[in-house]
Image (cartoon, rainbow, N blue to C red; front, side, top):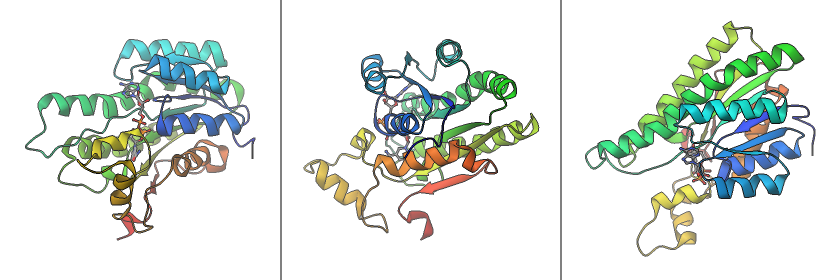
Length: 257
Ligand SMILES: NC(=O)c1ccc[n+]([C@@H]2O[C@H](COP(=O)([O-])OP(=O)(O)OC[C@H]3O[C@@H](n4cnc5c(N)ncnc54)[C@H](O)[C@@H]3O)[C@@H](O)[C@H]2O)c1
C-alpha cells in the first residue's frame, strides 16, 4: 500500500487516540504529511512522534487554538488540503437525566468543534488548493447515532445529527466557492476504541462489553479502527473527487434493518 494521499497535507483532530490516531497512521502510510492535534498534549505528541509527524495542542472548542493550529499547518506542512474533524466525546444519558452542563459540553466538542474547524481551515485550504492545483477534502466524524437515535444518548444523538447536516451545508458552500474542496461525513457504529468506556456495564469486563455491543450489529461484532481509517483514506483522496455532501455508514449493517 501507499501513495493514495501522496503530496496531501492534512490536519487531524483528536489524533492522540482511537480513530483519529489510526486515521493519522493510515494517512502517513499513504504518503500524506499530517499535523496531528489533540487536547491531550502528552499522548498526542507521543502519537505524532511515533509517526515522525508534527503535533499541535488543539482544543477544538477554542477559537484561538484553531488559529494557532492552522498557522502551524501552514508553517510545518506548507499548506493544507485535508481537514479531519474527528475529536469527539460521547456522554450517555436520557433527555431527563442529562444536565445542561453535559448537554453543552457534548455539543461544544462534537458540533462547535467541527464548525470552528471548518471555518478556521477553509481559507488556508482554498489558498493551498488554488495555488498548488491540488484538491481538498473535509471529513467530519458523525456517528450512526447521528442518524438512528437511542433513548440514552440524547445529547450525543443531537450533536452528531447536527454534524451530519452541517457537513452538507459545508459541501454546498465549498462547491460554490470553486469546487476544489469536498466535505463528507462518516457514520460509524461501535468501533473498539476508548470511547466505548461510556457504555461500561457493572460486572462486565471489556471483552464482555464488546460482545454485548456486537450482538446489536448484524455482522455480529463491533468494528475496528481500520474500518473507519480506510474509509477516511478513500474520502480524502482524489479517488472520491466526485463525492461531496455524502454520508458513509460504517455500521456492520445496523442501518439496513
Ligand atoms: N468508537 C466508536 O464507536 C465511534 C462510533 C461513532 C463515532 N465515533 C466518533 O469518532 C470520533 C473519534 O472517537 P474515538 O472512538 O476515537 O474516541 P477516543 O475517545 O478514543 O478519542 C477521542 C480523542 O478526542 C480527543 N478530544 C476530546 N475532546 C477534545 C477537544 N475538546 N479538543 C481536541 N481533542 C479532544 C481525546 O483526547 C481523544 O484523543 C468521535 O467524534 C466519536 O464521536 C466513534
